[in-house]
Image 1: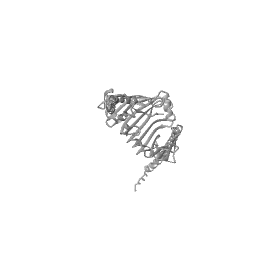
Image 2: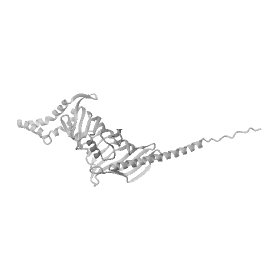
Image 3: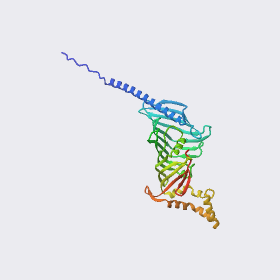
Image 4: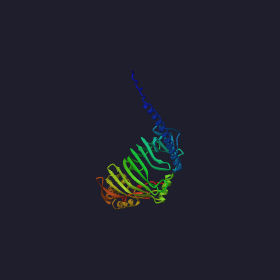
Length: 375
């Protein structure tokens, strides 16, 4: 008799895997479309929020993609109308991509392709910005933003079409976050600015030397963070007695290192008021870069200073000119001696007050210059 052999059972696991793959793919597609919808509504909400503040963003053409892992909005010939600025400004950019991961649709990352032109709507050319890489990252919903981060590699800002350089750096990082309160009520905002090899020769000849900076500040006194022009927001801050707390600042220019803490406010004219406690190592190497010789020249020195040098000339002809030429080293030595000796990062240093009086900046007894109004 022949023994019946059992019929082998067909393996079903390949079919099960295929079914599972189809189901997972379908669920992922649903999740992507949901996340893409949230990201798209978030972008639209940000545009609406900015428009209420007088900042209108448009694109010549828009395309949406990024499936399966993200959501991307590609904007060509991007432009922005900053109508709340005085005077109003028009910005034009070659390309912009806004993206979000499907699992984090409220975190928007934007990358920009320059150059960017900044001009008045009438057509007069004002500024041109360029960079190697530019990116921003925004966390939170339009109604309740949590933080913003801006990263620029090798940014350069020129006046006119390739004219005088206003600002340049190897890298610039700017981060802002809400540390307490809410967008609707008494927000407290922390800002961290980091600069690598930054220079601004158009502002002051002392700023032409590349400088590294790491500054943390806390802004207190805002009633809300609703969409509005920054000039209006700063006016409200000044009227409410708000303040800018410099929690920590470190600046290095060649061998000179400085750290500072203190509190600043705003005058009715929109200029800085207050005082920072400044500690400087190698101050004697920095002070000459302020141009003390030029500050003491006959056409720039104060009338009282010119009168003093004139009296010396009347006593002995030429003595006033000798005193004028040797006054700068004496001022450097005097400022150093008036400070409190201390130590900074293992080097001998001096502690001095850095005062802001309605925009006039004074380092100890020495007046350095004037800061521009913030509104």
